[in-house]
Amino acid sequence: MTQNARLPIRTVFLRTLAGCSLAGLVALVAACPSHARAAVGGAVPPVFLARLAADARSGLNDTAPPGQLLMSRVVGAVSHARHPRLIYVGADYCPFCAALRWPLTLTLLRFGKLEGMHFMRSSPTDVFADTPTFSFYRAHFASPIVTLRAYETATRFGAPLQRVPHAVNELFNTYDAPPFTEDAGAIPFLYINGRYVVSGSPVSPAVFDGKTWGAIARALGDPHSKIYRAVMPVANALTAAVCVGMSAPPRSVCESPGVILAGHALPHG
Image (cartoon, rainbow, N blue to C red; front, side):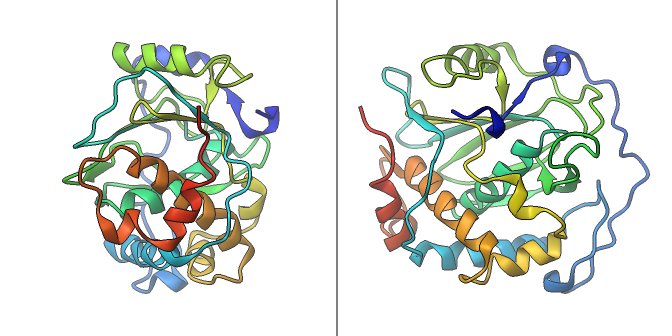
């Protein structure tokens, strides 16, 4: 685990909701997602998510191997064969959380639908300032086969946002620590069904520097773009991790060329 892939979680982690600094901002998204303009805090429209879902489906055929996944194998934890469980802990200010949300969103859209997402940028004053992304705060993931529990602990300005439940905090304290990561207590943190833990972002926030949400959406549809090459293999690896141990995996997803190849890169033991 490299220190430049995560941020220490701030003292807001276990505080109560204290209001969001994004009130009053509105979405300015055009009808065509390829030319989308947006404001931080604006709702992500269905047409934009539909564009990402289409990119996610196309990416299932991409057989480029993923790079460093920052993923560890979990042994002995409870897994769920019928409904694999994903738990994400991050914060809006965190640029590495911002970067991880792109392949994670593509992964989720392969198994279900996302609603209530909002456009977000990471802290304007931290490293990789203003990284474009989404926020899972108040988002809803609907899937017949996968469950998601996502927590954004603070706004992009560091104000407390969501309180993490005790049971999730126990998982965080157990698996967001050595030997799974050298950066104990840092974010982002992604727990995949008692089998894998992602500690950090396998995608560098630098790849999104200076880009708009619309530009990133366009790039995710172009296999020759730098963003596609950085994000899609990671999305395939996350998808492969979700498929492991599933009692009835969707063949169109879990047996796709890209996911099968990415599965070989998952940690074992």
